[in-house]
Amino acid sequence: MNSSKRPKLPAPQNRSQLFPVPQSRRQFLEQAGLATGGLLGGLSIARGAHVGGSETFRIGLIGCGGRGAGAVVNALSVEPAAKLTAVSDAFPDRAQAALNQLKQRFGDRIAVEPDRCFSGFEGYKALLASGVDVALLAEPPHFRPMHLEACVEAGVHAFAEKPMAVDAPGVRRVLAAGEKARQKNLSFISGFETRYHPAARDAVARIHDGWIGDVLTIEGVYNIGYLWHRGRKPEWTEMEFQMRNWYYFTWLSGDHIVEQFVHFMDLVGWVMHEQPPVSAWGYGGRAVRTEPMYGDIFDHHAAVIEYATGTKVYGFTRQQENCWNDISYRIVGSKGKLIRGRGGWATFVIEGERPWQSQPSQKIDPEANCFREMFAAIRNGKPINDCLSMARSTMLAILCRMATHSGQLVRWEEAFESNLVLAPDRYAWDATPPVLPGPDGAYPHPIPGKTKVL
Image (cartoon, rainbow, N blue to C red; front, side, top):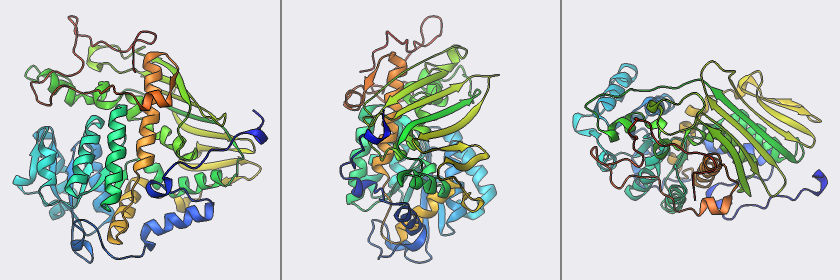
């Protein structure tokens, strides 16, 4: 398509309420600066009176795996007035293991009494009722919508690790919870840390300012080897086995195109001003990771996303051993291109009519920076709400999974309006998960051309 005739994307409805996108690079960077501590205003937030000075932020952790414990490290490292006061995990052994590790690093800032260490499927409810001010949500993605809803109802600020859901009804629940959070002046922060990376903000602002011209294509690669697996013990029920190995079951993780590659989808949504695409198609399968222990997810996906502007997105993600690995993004415009990954993962480079490269001073840990900005915004009575971006980025990844699992072209509207819920009938250790092994021990998995996703 001739770039001079490419239609422009309109501004999304209510964007200024949920995720404002400044009109210029200068405005964008000024907004980012305000978020780090330049905000003005009094404290007028739920559970907020105690953080007006030197008193403590009481943090609760829901989901005590590696990423959950890492989020606590990020939060306590940037906020001296924060303490961990409650934890909850489906499994008590994982909660205790996380506490032991965190105490070694932070000492008495890990102030979790025995009666504030919760477990089971309902533990998060007790944690939210224990007097925490901020909840860090890091259980498997399946549980994110219900945990976000519960945080808002309890008047607790929420940080949610990506992705935000595994199905379209879950995404819609997140959008509704985010709107309630906005009305209640509560933080609704996402684990899409690229949004909190100073160099990424600078780079995307330059794209929005036209430094590479009209965006023609966006390309992303996330090729790695195998990940963790926790095995199976005879005493575990089927539900416990799947919960302990949640990554390998679509109902819990969303498949790795949603759980991991969603970071690329988030960059796409950001560059495209949060506008939904028209459709997506793709392919994928289980080529080498075929053993029953790996549940029902694919080991490779490739997806093509099409926008009304003519912009096309090409995404490739693979988890296979002994193969060529790469993690990189490239955005090609009519006047240049932006590359992430060349010169290091934290480096952004523009090549073309207006060359540019991010600076070493911009290499701030975004996973820590999101908490720095979150606490500063809470103190100043203007909590950050990432609702629109976090929900649409997740839905974009779900759209692509629908396309790769089915082998069909799937339109955004029909995907977003889908009522297919990936969930068990009830949450209990003796409950029946949505997918069960066959007589040979193998789990039924999606087959492109046969599997229905709508």
